[in-house]
Length: 126
Image 1 (cartoon, helix red, strand yellow):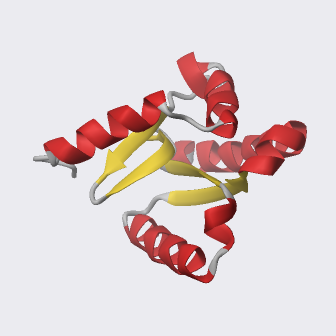
Image 2 (cartoon, one colour):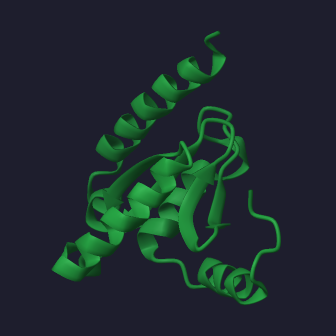
Image 3 (cartoon, rainbow, N blue to C red):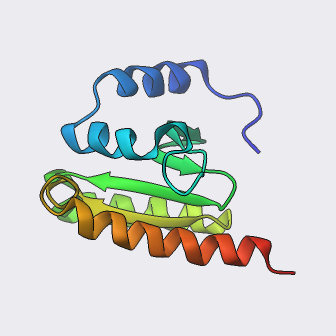
């Protein structure tokens, strides 16, 4: 699907891994190394032409963490386009606000757990 990735996009994704927000850093501590439901997540993963915050290939899940810029009209419009594009690839997109990840971590993780359970059961059913 992502053959011939743009080297600039890969460099940008790599640089984003080093400049993670506090919320991204916290979420990565939970998701990395199959710590969450034994699922393998990648961070700042390129799905051309986008870079998604977190991606799990096994269940087709994209997790986006949103800061204040996503609350603007332009931000909402861009996110809607991006979500539509990713959903057209049969991916499920979930979004959480940075302040919820940091301030209501348990609520976010419970929601994410439920989403992952549902997707895992779909991926194993005939």
